[in-house]
Length: 543
Image (cartoon, rainbow, N blue to C red):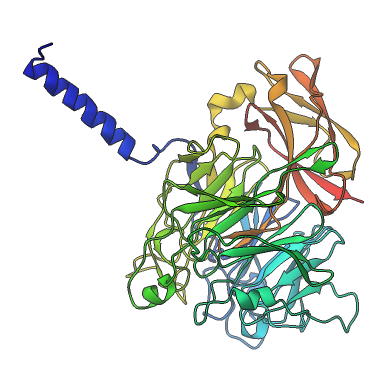
């Protein structure tokens, strides 16, 4: 068969176009951004959502004045600094209130306790061993407990335990762990050899370890490029997982991020437990960045089924390489990867090339079709940036200060004092007809382990009863690319969703069976229909 030159030319154009679109990363789609507050006065290095829809944020105390004054002419004790280094943001009124924090909270950690109070630990210099508590009210402020910790805690990780205490693991030159509150004045800090084994000389790469509560009550601990299952009550390693393929570091300052994938509760059990670790920086990147050479960030994710008898890492490729990113669980079980840079490492002046586009990861999709690039922000969020999920389904984004002081001019990446909200595509108006609205129970309801709870909700448009799920999300403490205490539970509903009137439906769910699966405390509960979540309600899990 003869072909004309024109025919061949058109075919070549089609082939070239096909190759071009398949060579590009996933197309940007979904989500929208809005600036909530142009300046909250501080750069939000740490962030915790509270069960009254307020968010506590704080920075550090040793760099000079911030851009927000303390109220009523107050100044820090024995100081000419009359500025605030912590604020409380009210989501409902979109307002900010300055708070007084006394000791240095730089690179610290914390946990929202079962009573709804934030207990925050450690920091730098005079904050090394300090415990701080914050109970939210219109006039409340930080309370500080000097020497509340046994050991210096700087870049440590905290996790809420089934007994209502928190465990505090590691920190710089702290190869041990301790608990708070203490049971006795003589309670010690057991050595934790795993942190010695994962410590890279002169670089570390095992700070802010990724810690998750396993449904049997033990802890999954990941540091550098490997992980263990740890019985903290006996100071015993129960299982050593394979090193992640490639052996590249993922913990601070290489600063990848990690999540415990959604836990499906069926008949009082969780049969599958998986962890996802994404991004980071290659070996040598920290030393290279300090010498002015900024290595490309890692574009790989490792996913491991830690509940398997013989668990193995499965590697996936992100469409955008990322270091210093944050990974958040969204109410519908998708993962949001947001903030960060595409080269360099965590540390002052050590990151380059901001990644402005978030990425979503759908864990239930087939491998190869899980990632989607979302619409970009215009604001770089590099070192010391933060993100938390809000009750209405938006993601609050703040921080970014790659400098030892606040610097706004003549630098690559100025100190960022703004707060933004990223609204995932499930909040688009085009989804309003399928979006559930919870009618009962009301927010701030208490629930008990292993009980049946009836949830009534409305949907204005056509309903697919089989697509309805109910999720519970814990409010996490976010700093330095890791959200401590983050977990999402898919409650057992037994396909019980039924019509209960015009556009009204009822679903019965069984609450988590124990504190090993859901430690007692505050959670956001959502009804999800066709992957579109309702606004959440606060529930308090009680024994």
